[in-house]
Length: 199
Image (tube, rainbow, N blue to C red; front, side, top):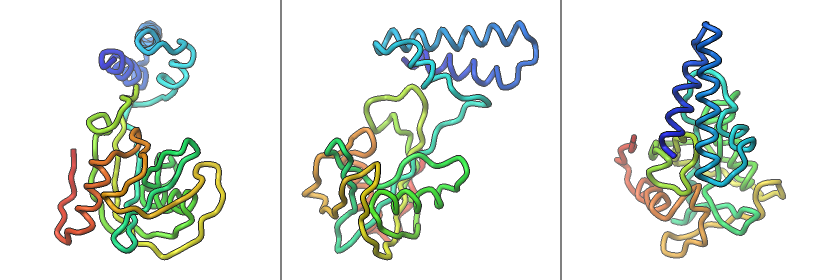
């Protein structure tokens, strides 16, 4: 799968700068081939893979996923998703917002809690920590936040929230966060001299 991802990236980057119509045609074909390879490897339909995998223009860069570590009485905030799994509140960074602005918005929407960011815990390469591997690169940013209270409200993403100790975590949405990442957040909270982990 890594070959398909690399081919897609090369072709997208070339299409961002190409002027020659013949080169554009060639790189568009390479991009289609990368989607065909991925469709073959995953079993997904070609059209669906192309829609998800070949939908962007411009120089290819990783997507940003920001996650908040919010603590109360030594326990960490998790939100319950509709599938019954739990995750740190957060998600994709919106194109028109900063990382900080997106995270504050996501935490409020998913948990009802008002927060302010205080410290970056880590910037991780998602595929080194979470499964399944995606067809595109993702940088995960974990940020320690301070809570100012708030009420949970019904929303389209989550069905509940709770605070959990490290030794009593519920079933996690491991494609978003795993036990190792939650433990890292606890360690950062307890360490006044925490040094941001950057991968």
